[in-house]
Length: 99
Image 1 (spheres, rainbow, N blue to C red):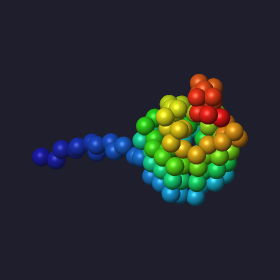
Image 2 (spheres, rainbow, N blue to C red):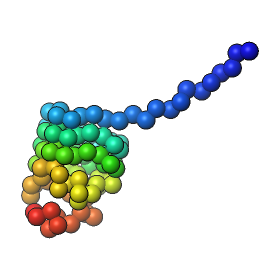
Image 3 (cartoon, rainbow, N blue to C red):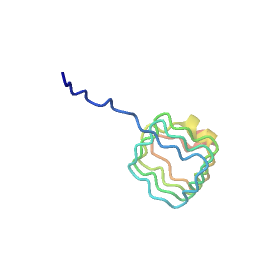
């Protein structure tokens, strides 16, 4: 008997830890559970991207465009390297981050 078994769907996850991704356009990217720890993403665009449970520990996001990003938390941003030129989504309180 020849039974067709549907392949199980696999959850794909970006692993960009330590990557040099300056000025890269990753707008509207699903970064759920992604690892961006230590990545240099200065001046990159993440407009509208989903950061649910993404690891941003030590990620350099100076001048990055995070406007309209989804599921991004102040905790994630405290672990990243940001500055006054980093564009944040409206729901993030910049003053809570010391900027």
